[in-house]
Length: 132
Length: 132
Length: 132
Image (cartoon, rainbow over all chains, first blue to last red; front, side):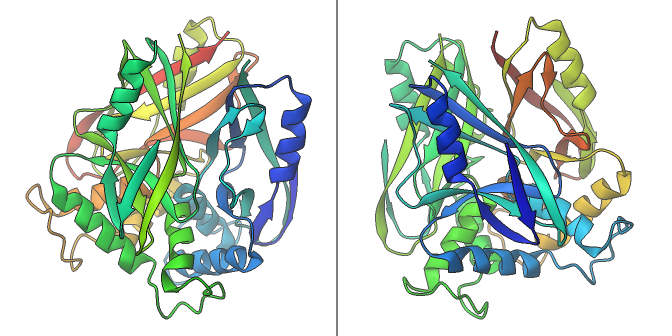
């Protein structure tokens, strides 16, 4: 699965995963999402108020600042090392129980790719189902 | 499984999961814990000294402060957006190998629901076993 | 599997896991890594530039400082409570899809034990494969 990103922030992809899951013969089991990058990550967050995703983006901008940290790894720009750290602080893989053909997400939970780089990217997420 | 919380902090539930696991016909496989909320989370932490859980709670209070961050998402109170962020910084799902009918936890590892909201809640955690 | 550490920092062990996986009759399924400690953790990070691992180590040293936090849990030294917190901020378990006998890692992704304690340790990581 590929998620197109255009700058830092959270990109929802719950619906894409639901569509993929419906096409499998998946009744009960375990769904694994795994992002194949070290400068973006996965989070499950509130899906109701878009302000949540903006606040999240801005908070990580302050928590792991691009300037003044004395990073060694700067060849790819100031948003490179911060991306690796923000990725470590969030998630590269998430596992979700599948029950009665549905992901076991709570009412307010949505799946997001958290892009940490400023430039546009196509992010690859492996989606795997194990079960019956 | 439901874990009752009464304010911010870590709530142990290792014993409840062990009891659940013993009732399954579970010899070897994978146990998944998945919390269905975006304002609490899961952590595995030291189970010996209760001070660890208090220090953990207090550190997150400073790391993601309730005031002065200029959050947009404030309708549900100052502990709402901070809860989402603290949840993203910890874990919504944890997978644990099951070996010879036991979770593969280290000696000092305990399972906790990390409540980020000030008011009491009943938190739902999906517990799933896959294997034989 | 055991990973020897000698002070704070990231210790690669991708090759050891690849070697282990090749010895299993593992074609497609899910690989779980689970560290049995609360003062070290797991991260997937860039495997190309060693500066990334040094910047990562140094950033966590600032993000969760050893002094001035007023920790209660100090009997085992100033690097004890910080280790628990840094562990909670990163990962105790990571799940990786296995496809055609290979882990589904991206080109630049490597597996690391993130040691948070100053003294040398032997860290136990459970490696489990489920699938066919």
